[in-house]
Length: 436
Figure 1 (spheres, rainbow, N blue to C red):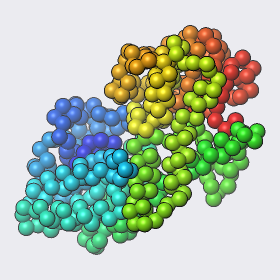
Figure 2 (figure 1 turned 135 degrees about the vertical axis):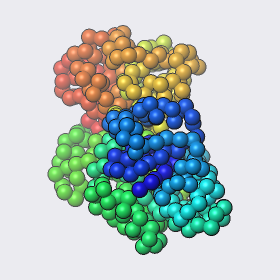
Figure 3 (figure 1 turned 90 degrees about the vertical axis):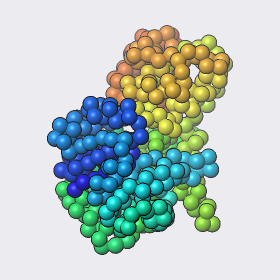
Figure 4 (figure 1 turned 45 degrees about the horizontal axis):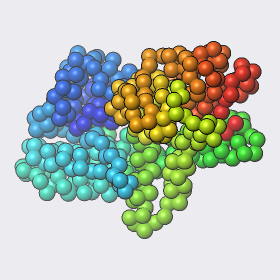
């Protein structure tokens, strides 16, 4: 089937490439000519495991195309998937302006009946508005139906999550739209859950917010563990054997980040308030996560007289390993605080440095400074204090003995609980973690 995908970010590009991989003829649309040329050469604009390999493979087969000519792409497509961003507004609501732009382009371009499928995460009821918006601006006498098809991808495993998903959610208002989406997804051989549009929209938020709640709950329990002398890792292990709870998302740490959980918890909280309902569980989740991100900094601030003039090693910038995404990353909040305190930061991350430089340009910033280095060793050599923010393999491979050898003062604040308390103590390292 001929498919057009609007947007070549994390959602759109992964979807387009995977559609091509299972045999569809796919055109990915983006407004940036340089980005299109980059993708045509087989280079991915996002850091995602396995994506470039599939891009090159399907570029070569002729099933995958890239263009800035949205009118031609939409005119020829049997189905158009919208995968543009819905960033968070200051009040927590979702910014739907990018979706509106694409909808108007579609309305003014299509010349035959078409199914428009919204993959972007949108507030409940948005697809109803999308369908009406497109119909309001239609130039030609054609039939348009809108379906909801939320994505459930984890950054770092997005390709695998698409090709081997536990289920596919589709939300439609007609048998025709349902059948067409079923046909598109038939080659994936994955169970399909077909519901109404608004239910599909809610499923996305309900899933993401449940996982965010699980993380915040474990972080809350971890903070209590510190006060009562329990070990959160022991607690999590005991919980994991309960099939009703499961073993995933039980790792305590410095809070969640990325493009989904922070935005989606705030968006659902905002939506609930709009309809006069107080979603107390999600509100608590947002509050816990906000506090958790700077918990280690606050511990270190109590321990230190000052950060001014100290070499501070920062290991890990991205919100998690396997991605170059720094959106809502705990590292960003902590770096801001450290710079305000006059710290000289030496930061290492195997993928996140280019994006970090746009937020924190290398050199002097306020009272402090930041320098980006090529290895954990460079960050740690002569450091007075170290913060671990991301669980990259390159960081996990640093041994307690190396912290002892490389640092001027072996003082480590670990937000990912990477090391054994006893081993760090035996090595002579002053070590602080979460919930232990």
